[in-house]
Amino acid sequence: MQEKKSHTALIISLVLLVILALAAFWYFFMNKPTTSSTTGTDTTGSGFSPFGRPGSGQQGSTGTTGSNTGNTPTEVKIPTLRLLSATPIGGYGASTTASTTIVHWIDRGRGNILEARGDTLTISTLSNTLLPRTYESVWNKSISGFIGSILADDNDTLSTVFATLIPHATTTTSAPFELRGKSLPDGIVAYAASPKKDKIFFFIIKNGRGVGYTAPLGGGSATQIFSTPITEVNVEWPEENTIAITTKGTADQNGFLYFVNPKTGVWKKVIGSLPGLSTRVSHDAKHILLSVTGSGNSVLTSIYSVGSSTATDAVIHTLADKCVWGNFYKNSVYCAVPYKPVSGVYPDDWYKGLLSTVDKIWEVNAATGEVHLVSSVFEEAKTSIDAYNLSLDDKDNFLYFMNKNNLSFWSLDLVASGGK
Image (cartoon, rainbow, N blue to C red):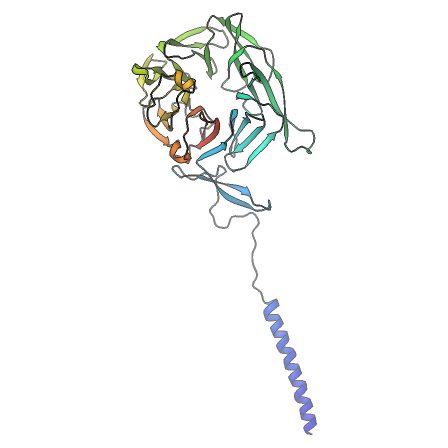
């Protein structure tokens, strides 16, 4: 009887152990809380701008870039003042798309074409076709082609080419594009793109005279529009019906600014004669920022109203060569202004590289006369910047410039810096 009871107890114990084991298995492995997953959805409600910009006055902006695996996008901080190229460049062009601003430039040493975007820190090499010693360029609207000046090995002879980015037929190359182009006529000393960037004006020395031509920027036959005894000029094409021609400035000679109609070739004197004259014309051709040599070889800077033929003090003091007018905000002109005056003969010593300035970026409104500081680039960059070759994208979101000290290339986010 005792043996039967023991056998029954053993069976009951085994049954209880099995029940406990099943209960433990269910608790630890089957009873997990369900989780909801999101794919590509921001559940925090924070979101981001396609430009990746915080509000005005923020020190930087944000964008997205791929992680090391290339699968997970991560947020990055885009510097307000950004060094795009530490090595010398040979000119650049910028364009604003629906989502961001894109800039292309030429590496002056090797001749590669590179690209930067306003919403990522990535610098892309677009073309491995080498076009070395390109020291300046003017780009078309889509920044897919440019007119460029190439310096020969003798460092004295210039040739001018038109080049276009063409997609590679295969994907085996390390760069997606190649450069194809053609040489332009000899003797070109100055050129400028039209406001729509679909045409080019170029100035040639022929038989001791200056001859002006217009042509499609993408290639095509050129049309002569004038011939003049003037040979030393700087040129702009600020407004569709206005080509601006300024005699090259020097402290010991008086200079002139002329407007030329690109359709008729008719000249009109606008300013002159003034010593050391250099100019920048607004994109509606209503205002001119001009600099001249003042007493004691100082620089005097003014804003001239074409309609009223009057000039007012610009408050800032800098060379017009260090300024650019807004494309979108046509009354605004941005200038690199020396932090402290540097003694010298202006503009000659600056052109020759005998003096260098340490600059801040200022904005002047030609309509209201208001002036405000946009950026102390020297303090932000922690290096001396003598800014020149300034330009803006279509919407005036970014100011681009080169540093004359080392030909490096920079961008300044005007939204983040409070410059617009």
